[in-house]
Length: 518
Image 1 (cartoon, rainbow, N blue to C red):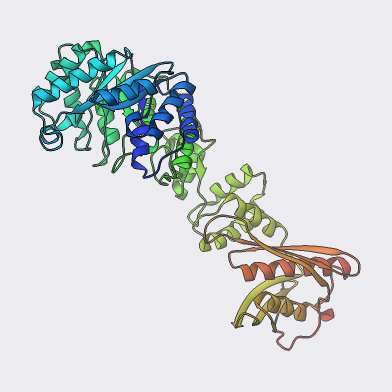
Image 2 (cartoon, rainbow, N blue to C red; image 1 turned 90 degrees about the horizontal axis):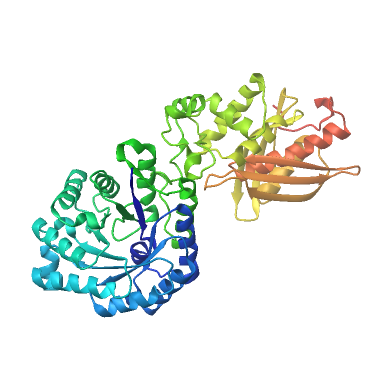
């Protein structure tokens, strides 16, 4: 197998598109993680662009070991001098210099003739060679260049001493078959191409950067350039993690070997997203939050029986602990039971059915059920008060101080009682209505409410502490409606008090009369 080198330009091409400048510590953190990933070359920045970038490249070159540290320059002697100075402390330094080669760039941007462009390119490579042996030449906008001219300039810079030549699709214009054809053409037509590493660099303007890069690799490219999470100019660069895993899953088709440590992919993606502030889309291939999630009941059943039915990549290969079964209203009993078992709950089928019914009621209110919801659900399901059950609640408010609550409670799962009360706000009114129905006279010591899961539809977890002359009792309630959760918590505590202090078999005759008894 031939060796394929990975060239990461997250800190250069990726960072320049952010609209912000990462500080040196942030760049060092990313660089260290990229080395752990097994990338061969790190393009640390463009030293001539600013004093800050110069200093960042200088420190990365000095601190980071185990990879080639590369700096970008234009085909300008001053750029090259600064690049060489910044890279002085690197274990393995590389200058990446080049110039645009397409007709539109030469005529409209550079305002140079083709011969002048070749002269500048050759001069830049020779100047860089004075400082170090490893020099990469980029032929900007190579895909839109005249092919005969591209062959000519590449041959000239190789003769001048370039060790790597890069043929970018700078504006993301190529299609996979066209880009693969270009790589093959260069391999066949540049007479001294065997003396260098042939590199490819694709942009994602038409959404084909990864496909183009893979086509280039199959056509014989030796080095792939890109960024973590695909960040970069306009629509971004080739996502290196996508190329890594495409090659990993179909090794025989590509016939290349790398030193990539795939288990570091997820960690690298998360770090780059955290530091750059660029979120990874949920449906992003390989590293998106949904990449290994299964929401359909049919898919969940299949993947639980055999992961390869719906997974072509074991998530642990990229550093994700396991696949994620997304629990929604479409999930079946099998998926729910499996996740509960992972959380430590073992249920007989008879109890599972009861839990499943509660799960569906909750899932109808929320788009997704999280582990926190399941813990709450199990606490609620396995400890539902038997003396009192909340059946219905209605609250009306008049200003922020006055509220009326109407409550219906089932007593011993038989008789239903309805009553109402006015309170200082909706929660106070609810508690007073419960007191009227149950006859509770205990003191309210504490009441708290917090979110137990994520999102705007998160469940509220209400906790109530009440005290009688003998003991204190804690009640909990879980619901997406915080008033209902508060009512459940208070009723839970009152039920525990009465079951304990008055006896579980207390008859409904012992309860106070209510004018609205059903």
